Length: 220
Image (cartoon, rainbow, N blue to C red; front, side):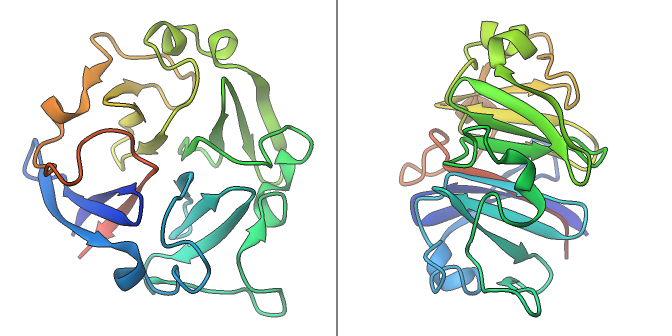
């Protein structure tokens, strides 16, 4: 078993093999023909963010709506007795975003590993979980995470992802940072250029300006 990271851009995604280090892109494919019912739900292109949860799902966000994707079934699975996806961002597990401005769209998100999640919107961020609600913020990234702002990541985050070993990355433009998933403190030596460290991205899918990033932590 090995983790695979998925970098999404436009209507395509690049699957990244982490092992052996430093890893490489395995292939680039179209969302519409490879990810279950994404196309039928209007989520085959132009996503804004993706975030994993601990239950084997990934949530894809587009504008003010989202779908819940079952990784094991490779499909969007609707909840029994509920309307089909997509849902407004504030319906369901992320209702704590109501009234924050984050319900209009998300720039990025990642799971912290303790049951909470960071969400990014323009130059602001917040940490929350269900059922507790908002734990920190919403406030400017520069106030909550000054080292993140100092690294040039004070607004317009592309997306983020936390690996099974706890390493957490945020991507913006052609750069990325590694940071503490709880405090958002940036590790020394970052930012780095994504293409220099994440190998194998083809010219047709450059290592920059990702729409969304997510992980399958137990890919066969």
